[in-house]
Every structure is written in structure tokens, then in C-alpha cells.
Image (cartoon, rainbow, N blue to C red; front, side):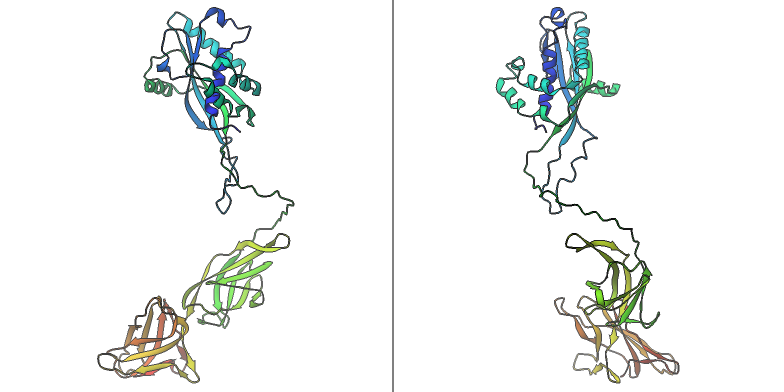
Length: 428
């Protein structure tokens, strides 16, 4: 690979080719005092015949641009130094004050590059060590620095080819350099590979290849229902059925919230997975996903495999029941504090979750009354609590059905054909 002086090295080699014509070329007899420069055209200073090489644009070579990816590993460490691949655009102009000399000089330059379409490794080495390039503006020390770029050792040889810019591009170029137009030809040098000198972290060589051919599985979860039957509430600690297609895999796992279930915790078939909800889930909407792990390597280790869509289940809170009674306690009003209702729920409610008490009057003679109340505020750093307190000011005496809504999920009521909704209830 070349170093970051490669662009200057290419210009130097092109200058060398023009300064050292072939023995059969008659240019020295026609123009004995020919000068070759590599500056901007406006800096060509005298009336002596000049061929000027002007580098005016570098473009990324599209063929090599993506060959070195990726340059970093998953930890962000550099693993290789992909080359900066460039195409270099040159403007070759002929400067002379005598008749026909401009044409002669440009013809000579174009013939030279036509006969040397590839900058061979020998040509590059000869050019960068030639004393003919040493001038007042290019001292021997500068040429020696350019020679260290290792241009001759890069993988792909450099090719010179005519380049034909659009008319407006050429006009804009001459306008920008503020110089009088002279006979000009355009060339492209391709490709120059510049490699970074920064250190890279190289992995040890691969001793063995393990290739696995696996059919693609489109795992789909259609719904999640209570094992007791569709339409039944999904409650903490109960069993649920995950229904869908292509659910069985070599290593099937189910992710519920932040918990991952596998092995004996699952009863798996292709269209259904039965499982008990893990402890620690909060009431509300809970995400569920089926994952197939792949055993790869020697010894086999679980790796990321196929994943289903994420399905949502609504985990409903429930009022805890001890024996025949629900854990609902009426706290009498005291001083400025209104009457309160203390309800114990499963699962525990986090301090960030909104909990709302819903009271519906039972056995009303005319129109049943209903009320809603938010739970007392808690500190965000408090642990999840099973017992919540709801201030219930202004609720008249009577018997009321009790529900609690947590993060949009409501606790269920018990229904009988004879009495409709009957419990949990409280008498105030």
C-alpha cells in the first residue's frame, strides 16, 4: 500500500516521463529547451516552452471503496486499515509563445502517456530516485521523502487514461485558476491506494470453519389466552397458552416481560406453548416473545436465533381473598382525613403505576351510583406495594362492588347467573 505522499509521487512520475523522452523521440531536436513543471497554470512564469502537469481533483474509486469493510469489531477496536482508494484527475497544458509550439508540446505529452498507459513498478522506482527531478523547488530531501511512499509496491498498478470533462466543467476550471487558456488535455490516474499507518488489532488465524445450513423459520404468535379458556382473565401466577405457528424449535424459550422461560417450564408444540406466568410481573400490558436459540460451536453454545413478533397480554390485578373474605378494609374518617378504603392486590403495584379504585353501587332502588378515586401518592423510590389506600370522601352508605384499575388493567368481578356481579364488595 502507498503512504499519504502517494498523490505527489504520481505527479512526480508523470513529470519524469515527460522530462525523459524515449531515444526515438525527436522532441529534444524540435524543442531543445523544453521545461516540465507541476504547478498551477497561472504560476508558469516565463515564455520558454513548458508542459505543465496540474493535479486538480481526487475522487474516491468506487471499485475499491467498499473492499476494506468492516474496519472495527463489535467492541469498536480497529481490526484493519482499509485503503483510501483514489482516482486522480490531471490537466496537462502546453505553454509557448511561438507558432505551433503549443500543438507540438501537447502532442508530445499525449503520445508519451499513450505509450505508457501503465506506471510500471520499475518506472516508478526509476522516477523517484532520478536526479532529473531535483530542482530548486524540488530539493533532494523532498524527493527522498516522496520516494518512501512505496507507490511501486501497491497491489494494483496505476493506469493513465484520457479523461473528458464536460465543457462547462473545463470552463469553470480555467475561470477558477485565473489563467489564460492554453492547449490542454485531461488525464485520470487510477487507482492510488493510500493505507493508514495506525495500528490495528488482528485476531488469531481461524483453525476450523463450522458452517450451518438452517431453514428459515417464521415464528408467529397470534394471541395469548388464559389456560382456563379464552375470555377468562389472565392473573398473576396462572397458566397461559401462547398460540401461533412454528413455535417449536431446537431450543425454545419464551420471554415474558424481563423474565426468560425455557426447558421444563414450557410445554411446547408447533402451534401452542403452555406456561405459568413468572413471579415479579406487574399488572398492565406485558410483552411476550418466542425465541429459538441455536446451538453453535464446539462445544455447542446457545446463540441468537429466530424471534417471533412481540405479543401483548393484559395481566389483570386481583383483590386478594383469604378464605371466604376479600382483603378490603374500611378506615374511618379522622379529623381532616376522609374515610378511606384499604385494598390488598396481587401482584404488587409499583410506585410509578397509576392505581384507580372503581365503586359501583349494588341493589340501588332507582339509579346505581358509581365513583372513582386515585390511590394515595407514594414516593418514586418506594418498593412495589400490595396494599393500597384510597381516600373515598363523599361516598354515601350502601353496598358497593370493588374494582381496582392498575395501568389500564382492571381486577375482575365474580359473576353469577342468579345475582349478576356479586363480589368483591364492601358495605359502607
